[in-house]
Length: 325
Ligand code: KG4
Ligand code: ZN
Image 1 (cartoon, rainbow, N blue to C red):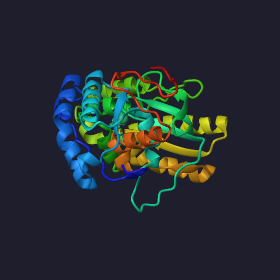
Image 2: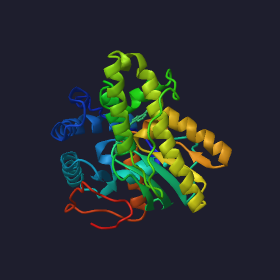
Image 3: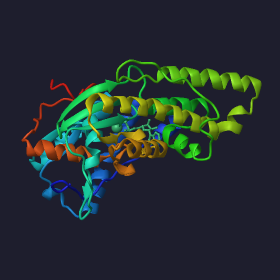
Image 4: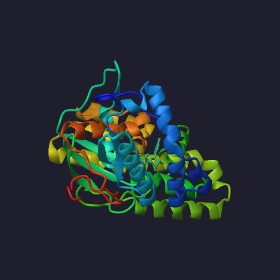
């Protein structure tokens, strides 16, 4: 990024996870380690920037898998040290939340006004957050068990879809009947979420149907996908509506991998129209994990002079509204 303008955004896809049906922590960190130099070189190349032109190195401190965070943190420290430039640590979830502020040169993007609500839906987190300023956030709802992305991935696995299942469920849903099957919606108080009941319900349902007819999954994959996706979207939108009622905030953003889901994007756009909310959807390329979202947070930390030192260590658990070290 130059200032708040994105110059390039290179992502190394970790195909390795598909092979093993999920993220294997040790393989993830090794794959990160191998990717750093080629990814950085490609990003600099696309941006038309030389290594010696870099002013700041930003990296993800957490939350996440310790192994991957460690290699990232160590690499960033080494890179900053070698170039003799400052380091900025970034919370991954703040990155997802601020992904609505990413813009490229000469691109006009409308940004939300503070305070706005963010529905953060990723593979590890599901939260409703009051975003008071770029770096001031308060979580007002969270999942008590699985995240929305996990619900997609785990249920997908039950019907033979490889990891990550979310995008495939999204695609299959387009040809399926979302009302063909109905699954449990949790009754959780306040603004919190739960997805483990849905997971169990989905599993038992599929097992029962397979006993009756061993072709059931094959013949109904798209209907199962669409019905599952509808249930997850309903769970999310019910709580988001409640949060809007409670806070009176009507500017809404979404972020995280599940924010790429076309059903969720359409459904929220429809509700926003009906209810007169202003909805901000990040571009799909900025919803799943990316470097641009980390750079946006780092830019705002830079403006506030929030640099870090070489003594920094990663944090596997790292909550956005607690300022602990
Ligand atoms: O934010 P993210 O890239 O990584 C984490 O920080 O967890 O989110 C990954 C999650 C996975 O669970 C993946 O299945 C889900 O986002 N995901 C989707 C879609 N694209 C990615 N879920 C539903 N529909 C999609 N189109
Ligand atoms: Zn993420």
